[in-house]
Amino acid sequence: MDNWVLKGPQTLINEQSSVNITSPTQVKVKVSHLLLTDFDAQLFTGAEEPAYPKTIGRAAVGIVTEVGENCYGVEKNARVYFEPTRPCGHCLACLSGKTRECTSVLQAGKDFDGFLRDFVVCEYSEVAPLPDSVDDIHALCIETIGIAENIYDKLNLQAGQRVAVVGADFSGNIIAQVLQYHKVIPIIIDNNPAHLEKAKKCGMYYSFTADDDLNANILNATGGHLCDAAVYSGNSRLPLSLSTRLVGQGKTVVISSIASVTAPMDARDILTKNLTVFGVSNAYDYTDAVINMIIHGAVTTDVFEKEILTEYDPVALFKERCSPASNVKKSKMTVLKMIL
Ligand SMILES: [Zn+2]
Image 1 (tube, protein in one colour):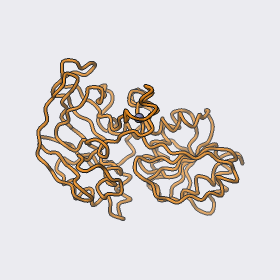
Image 2 (cartoon, rainbow, N blue to C red; image 1 turned 30 degrees about the vertical axis):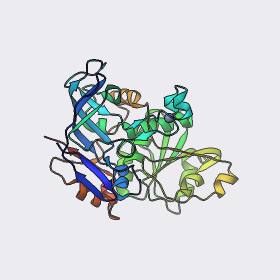
Image 3 (cartoon, helix red, strand yellow; image 1 turned 135 degrees about the horizontal axis):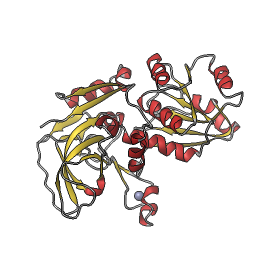
Image 4 (cartoon, rainbow, N blue to C red; image 1 turned 90 degrees about the horizontal axis):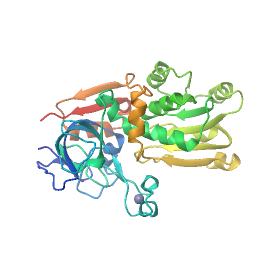
């Protein structure tokens, strides 16, 4: 049984292994689809350093093949989504029972074994059953949508407010779609014409390139007020200072990424406009809410190009994804269809 284990930077080895249920609250799941993420790519290069060895793979769905006798709400043959994050169990929030506020959320592939393997045995609470109306492709986007929803919750926005979304790659586009679902108006900023085109296809009215006209365009789109908030998508190669430049006095800027971001930040706007800046890097405890959002059509994945691979070499795929010319790849969904 395949199990792709990261032993060190760029050292990803297929260790054949088998797993079995050892407790009545565990399920055994055949992984069926896995979405390659930038987080996986950073783990592969060593930019994110796991406690080696760790099985790689953060976003996956599967089919339950075995259920322990004390598992609830999960049945054999059910399609499930693997929770990509878990509370640490040790921080102050966790110890006081508020796991949703955990300050050091554990991540699949880094802190515990990820899902690029044939079978996973885990607690039944670590998988979420998927209704028929949530297809595998949408299910693979659950964490990205959850991060967008987490950002929306934290920004405390009202209908009609205007939010700059800097970077309209895969995650930036989904953030904008979720804002739009909540009747907040996204203003997309990206220099990639394909990204801007996708934003338009999703019904986004304002999308601009980061050129000399940007300030004037933003003033026009906001009635002269600048944006009510800005979200910087971590995969974007755009300067972080765009997000602080485009918001008004006393507003908030969110930096969003599941992978690490090394962009430098200019403090001038933060100081002169008295801005609040924070990061959102996970969607722990958002899975049920997101499944409900998908059922209600909050997000479409139709606009994204997809490659669904049944034969693949993970090492080659990660090397390709990490290469400097991989910008095209990043707006595409690369899905491994894992067949025994
Ligand atoms: Zn914790």
